[in-house]
Amino acid sequence: MVDAGPPVEGDVPLYQHGRVIWILAGEPSGDSIGARLMQALHRIDPMLVFAGVGGGRMEARGLRSLFPMEDLTVMGFMEVLPRLRLLSQRLVEAEQDIELRRPDIVITIDSPGFAFRLLRRVRRLKVRRLHYVAPQVWAWREKRVKHYRGLWDSLLCLFPFEPTWFAERGFHAHFVGHPILQSGVPHGRPERFYKRHDLRPESPVLLLMPGSRNSEVPKLLPVFEKTLELLYKQFPDLQPVIPATSGMAPLVRKMVRHWAVHPSIVTDTEDKHDAFRAADCALTKSGTSTLELAIGGVPMAVTYKVNPLSAVLGRFLLKVPYISIVNILAGREIVPELVQHNCTPQKLAEEVTALLTDEAKRKAQQEAFGTVLAMLQAPEGDLPAMAAAKQVLALMETPLDELRAHE
Image (tube, rainbow, N blue to C red):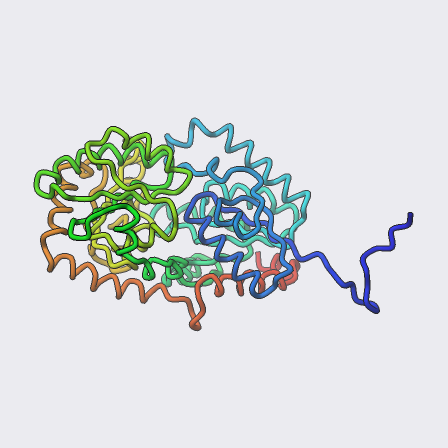
């Protein structure tokens, strides 16, 4: 039987294969960014086809992940070493998949350690490359910027000062607003959270956010446990809540099963938003979680703890006075930072006590949050994901010869 090809109406096929976007996210925050970007792209062009690597949120938008995103979720020099062989294998698999598919564009989201190696390896394929979430070399290891030349055709930035910073070093970049502004946190319902977890509305709720990486959670949860033991002496009805990704939830449950008071562990997105609205204060690792808390108006203290060698390297390379983006954007310490040797149960308990009892301190943080969040709005009134989608499609329409002429 002869294949007559696709059915046609006149000279126009009744169906066409959509353009292919190969997209990579290497951690939960990137998975959220990627899912919103995919949704915005499909609103503009429903025929787009996605391939690559992502987590549950991106898979819910139609991505069939090449391998588990969690394989890439690791941070810190000493933490990466045991996984070098697996990471090398995943890098080869991603490169081969791109070579076979020949997509119209490759998009990498954050995760610079893996993403930049991949972008460098696929450069030979003459494919458009876009990196979403500019590397924070303005914060540390500024000299690394010289190694980025030729890595991407377009760079999308989350913070308003970044395009100027990169332009001064010869890179063209676009500010598209911060995806956290599309979070559903403001729509959370505290009364639903109390009912779902059988909690008392009159008792204080403390969010504990130890991170979303295998290298983070085991270091912070033991400190949080001892912090709670101190806090219970003054706040016997304190109710701890741990928002966790689905990938981290089993580890969290295992680590807290012997705690004197079992915390509520939240994995569902709606439940997480409800928890933010119900919370009185939070202890959180540095990162995007601080912006989530700011959107929810949750007073917080920021803390972090890594391998001692990683900490020494970090102190040597850090170029900004703060580790929290809330403080960096504000240019001053809005929220206290308790890092490494200051990440102790006693000091964390003191900060939580102040946040629960000092109304002036709470209000000062909340007022400052509004100023910081206003700086993250996308240009021209777009939602951040839509602003990013427009940049992606503009790049896809740009001839490769024109892009390479500027390298």
